[in-house]
Image 1 (tube, rainbow, N blue to C red):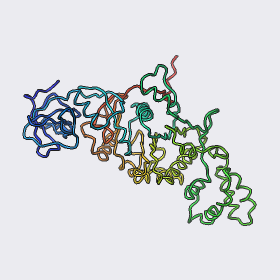
Image 2: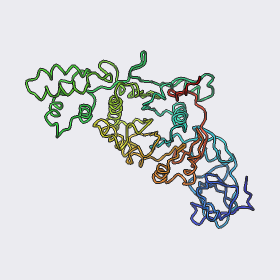
Image 3: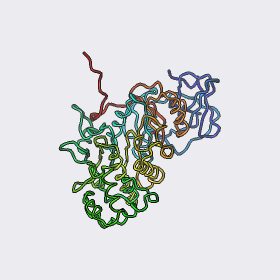
Image 4: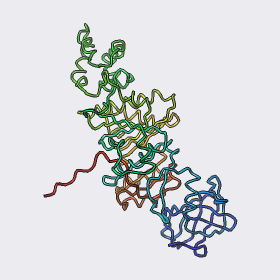
Length: 457
């Protein structure tokens, strides 16, 4: 229900926030409002409800004047009438902030389209929701918008083959976004699918520390073998890792023969991940197609997923001074950056992601991390995220953690997450005009991996 100016009065002492004394009817946390003291009309967002007093608190988003919203200024007032926002003022908010990517419908009255700011994906983004919340489906909606309406290259680390059909369109898909997607260069690299472009890595191109992680070599504990690997650089003049095995076996010293045994015992030479004479994933990504999907789930061993991830992350980091923007979308991020992973390869991948999270932003290396459980992702990565997308989350521990990490998300909106329906989400942070509860739009491309149904008689 709408509140009239006679019903509700607000006060602002600092020109940044406002308070509506209680009890107040007609507004909920997340409501956009217009406050008018007679001299100035301003747009505000209700962020907090004091249940004891029934009062509301919020922040001022900018001044409404001359058909525009000026988000650079706001002013204090002793008493101002408060009314529900009108659709025209919401349009002004979208225009003023550059919110152009339509991803859903705003669930807070008066409703209307919910949009994201494409230019604010130059900050790291954290996306979470429990199983069944629609997290992966919803992420596809955002990726479709980014690929269709921006020139930002996207690399998707896809462990469950959920995005391998990102280059296809659903039957009957129409409109500007569908038309744009048809023209985009979307590459899908897969390990073992006949006819598909291969997902491969090149051992010779990896930094020495990463090569050692693949071979499980410690530079101190295994110093002799590690040193032998260092001096094998001249022998590694081919893309085929197995070509060095005869050289190692024929060596006069036991160290090189030990290194040969390590390669054979670990089964590394049998991995299908090695490029040989084929193109590596890093070669494809360096061409900067509009989107590159890395189907990590098709390898015969988990370590090979980590090899590809490490090779790609290392290559982008080594080329960081080129400052060529790219969005790195890591689905099921706990597979690559959990604090509990302890193998040499897993540690190397996690440490590179921590480095990119801390320092990559200024080089155009931006992360979008998606997971079911925030507690399964390393804190050093979450702490660097300036954007939040939250779907249904029932765990009190995880919600408390989100409230700690993402103080810009109103606590009252975070608390509603356990009651979200499938496809509903809270977006907060720099990539949205104001914290928003929304229902995601339908996908234009099919989801690659879907739940297996229960067989029925």
